[in-house]
Image 1: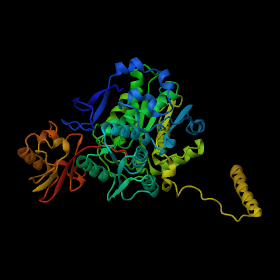
Image 2: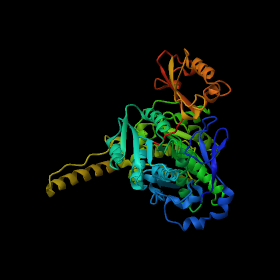
Image 3: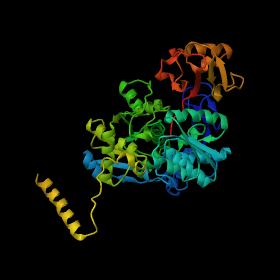
Image 4: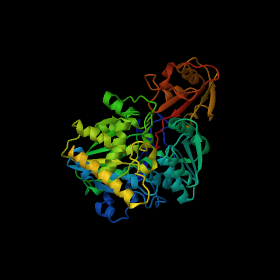
Length: 418
Length: 91
C-alpha cells in the first residue's frame, strides 16, 4: 500500500491528485509527492527496513508507488566505504565515500530514480518511456525499459562520447541525436512530452523520479548505523539529488529513525557553476550559464531545481564551491589512487570540492564527512586520457624487463634520495 | 506576426491550441498582446511585479531570453517564441 496523499506545488502550495504531472497548473512550480508521515511512523521501524532485501525498495513506505515494484530489484544498497587513505590525504579524521559508481545495472545514481520512475510509469499504464539525457540517465532508462519490456525513446545531444552512446544503444532503445547541447535537447523533449503522451522520466513523471534520489540519503544514514553524517558533499547539475538527500535525512528525523544533524554542500565545476555563484552572491536568483567543462554529466547551465539546492544548503548551514577542470581530474586521480574507486568527472568534482571546503575551514577536520560519488569513470575515459601514464612497451624477453625494472627502481631511488 | 508555442498547462487559455500567433516588437509587448487575445495568460507567465515567473522559460528562435535582453528582447515577423515550463535535468 501507499502512504502518498497527493501532489503539492512547492511554490504556491496548490494540491492535486496523483497523476503523471510535473508542473503546477497555477504557477508552473514543480509538484512534489506528499506522504502521510503519521501513518508511516506507525509502521516503519529500523528493524523492518533491516529485515528486507538489500535494494532501494527497502524504504518503500517513503517511495511513491502503490503496488509491488516492477524494476530496480537489484538497484541501490551500494557500498559506503570508509576512506582512511583519502582521509589522510585530505587531513581529516572520519571520511566516507558513498559509491554509486557500482550501482546496478548501469553504474550511476540514476538507477535509483529510474527504478522508481519506471515502476510508477507502469502503474500509470504507460507502454513507452523516454528521457532527455547526455548519458547516465539514458543508459539507465534504456536498461530498465529493456528489462521491463517497454518501448523506449532516448534523446541525446549529437556530440556525446561513444561510451555514453553505446551504453544506451546496446539495450535497444530508439536513440535520437539532437543537434545542440543538453539544454536544447531538454527543451525539445518538453515539447515532445506534451505531444506524444509518453512517460518522460525526468519530465511528466518527474515528481516520482526525484523521490528515488532519497534512497541515496536513506542508505547513508542506515549504513552509518542510523546516524546522519555531520557533513555531506553532493554534486549539483539540474538540482535533483542534493535537495532529495536533505529531504531523506529530514524524513528519517521526522520519523525518529536517526540520530544527529547534518550540513549539506553543493559541488560544481567552475565551467558550469550557476548554483554555487548564487550561493556565493547570497541571492535566490540563478543566472543561467553556457557550460564549458569536462564534467559533462553535471554541465547543466539552466538548473530548474537550483533554487531548491540553495534552500537545502542554506537551511542546513552548509556551503558550496566550484573547482577547475584541472582540479576535477586531480580529484578523480586522488580517489582512484587512495581508495581504488574510479569515478567520472562529476565524482572528481565532489572530491576536489570537499578538499577545497576542508582547506577553507568550512568543513572541520574532526567531524564525519561523506563524499557522494554518483557515477563511474569507465564511462568517461576521455576525461583522463591525456593525464594518465601510458604502459611501458617491451618485447616478451626477461632481459628487457630486467633492464626496465632496473631503470624504474633507479628512478625511485633517485627520487627518494633527492 | 510571431509564432508562439504554448505548453499544455496554458492551453486552457488558448482553446486547446498548442501554437498561436501574436504581435509585439518586444517579448514584453507580445505577452501583453497574448493577454488581449487570451485573457489570463499574462498572469500565468509573469508574477505580480511583471517579471517572468521563476519556473517559466521563454525562448526566442531557440535562445533563452535570459541570454538576450530578457523581456526587452526584440521580435520580428516570423520569429518563433516558445513558452516552456522549467524542467530539471537528469543527464
